[in-house]
Image 1 (cartoon, one colour):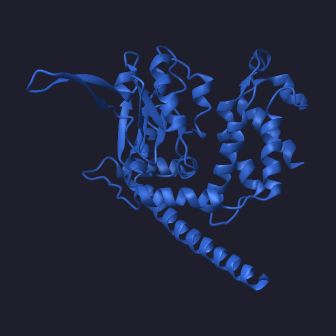
Image 2: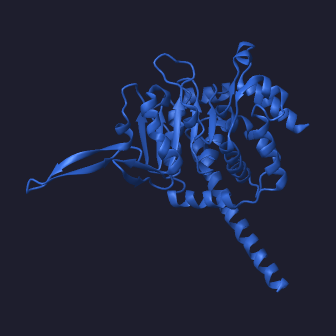
Image 3: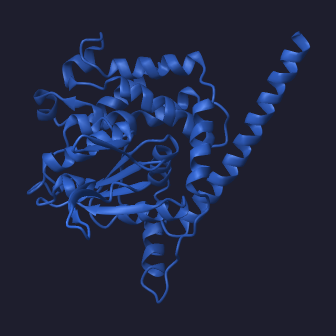
Length: 337
């Protein structure tokens, strides 16, 4: 019996290793195809991809002109997903995203309502400048992002699988914008901060995007393959040490948990979704880098994108010029000692 069990375990391990190697090859091809259109910004591309590979949603925050929109459309094409885009504006209504019921009349004059699906019925929904819409419209995405279905007039409509929301936000222009509610921010697996490109990358942008032709991304995988990779990531083993590191980091970011710096500077901290996001993204990052299991280094590397949008500073901390990034960096430093 012991020999049979050992053989079965060995076969399972071999199957997982073979699946991981195939997934690694696919991810390498995805990265290469994206790099033909998005120059530099490796950490931005990586974190956005980790959000998708982890099966969740990502919020891209950066000033205009940093290719946030282009990155999302590129990923949609490379991953072979059915994509749609919604440009959020102050007058946008929930029905503009979800869809609405219209009245039909048949030849006999009989009338009935028919639901016309909105752009949310896509595998990749781009929510451009999401903070420009009113809270009423922003809330239209809450159910879809968490439960993967919507309810219209008491009727449930399931969304396609996979379903991902990649939203963009401009952090500078606050006039005529509405801050995202905490409940919605928490539904984003990661916040990806998009900074200005490096000099060499910006030079390449100038040379390659102002000519007669531009590179067009091609599909590397399809939706079914993406679902397989996402399932593989969920099967990757996580050691007790990594689980403890995740719990320690997430809990240390909450006031009232015994961390003096957090108690002094943080008004409210991350909930259990932060730990779930860290588990998924740590596994995805390990596979992204060619490893079969995540390490504590993955946890530390993901601390900022996972926690940044799930915390708020006290008024006193903001008055001192502190940022959430500073607090997270301090927590990571403490966890390393």
